[in-house]
Amino acid sequence: MRSIIKEKNLNNKKILLRLDLNVPLDKGKITDTTRIDKILPTLNFLIKKKSKIIILSHVGRPKGKIVEELSLEPIRKELQKKLDIKVKLIKKNIKEIKNKNFFDAFSEKILILENIRFYSEEEENNNIFAKHLSSLGDIYVNDAFSCSHRAHASIHEIPKFLPSFSGLQIDLEVNALTKITTEINRPITCIIGGSKISTKINVIKNLIPKFDNIIIVGGMANNFIEFFGNSVGKSIKEKNCNLIVEEIVTLSKQEKCKIFYPEDVIVSKDLNGSSQKKELNKILSDEMILDIGPKTIEKIINIIDNSKTILWNGPAGYFENPNFANGSIQIAKKLIKNNKENKIFSVAGGGDTVSLLNNLNAVDNFNFVSTAGGAFLEYLEGKKLPGITALD
Image (cartoon, rainbow, N blue to C red):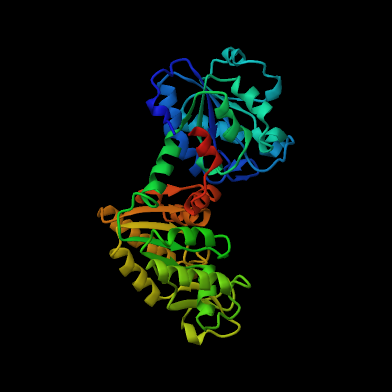
């Protein structure tokens, strides 16, 4: 994988830049600009190199049809504001743009082609469509790590036709994930949550031989609590998962990786209720587990203090209600403190984790925070990502 920062001749080159600008929209307004903020360094780098930038991106799932509500116009406005440079949205049908000279008519240095998923050929990974796209530029740059687990035309096929490079954000993402999967500074700990253990079983199995500790929190911890003989009341849990839990426990013993799950919890009778601390053997049938308890927090903090590398994916509880956010907040605060003191290398990822850190204004207090969801998890599973292998 070659980084664009190593390419010397970018002056006046037309750069096809694949970005993930799939930001949340509410009535045409962007509600979270994190994904835009993260790709600004790549754009600024190319601007300084006097390149002409042609952005390929998408919003939502229009399924090959033009959906006006999913236009990239709000993104164009936000980019123009953040970069303080004119940005133009090209509404013309991509298939009708015959060659790269088309872009010479525009004085703007940054052009955005309309939502690439308005074309069914994108998600079909159509080779002919990709060849046409490649004819519109001189160089291709992929800076959309969060889309790179998709074998789509603008990600997987264009590199077959153009000199292709990784962007600055992909470089950061891959370097961070490499440090926690291959270039490990031990002891290394994973704190992993989420509602479904089946969606992360392959991540856990791939990490067990490499990690010293895996801490299970969130909804999936309920499966462990129940597996070891405790009632979880009406808590969220995934059905028919005992074999998965048993497989994780057995593998962890073989690989000498310690598995931790909550020792005490915070419960309530509904999501909007007040919180109550409970030991595992005291949970009633009409109660649900919504956070980790103080003994569990203390244990996790102790493990963090004895770790040099931390991967965090998934909050510890139902953090949307402040009554059940304490576990996640205490984990975040401890990671931030140790990070500031240069005691750990910390990587966080996953939609809910990023939302939590945004709420705490703590995104910049980690070595790396990934906005990628599926790509982040698939990389941790050890899978080859189509967008990354295409660059190789």
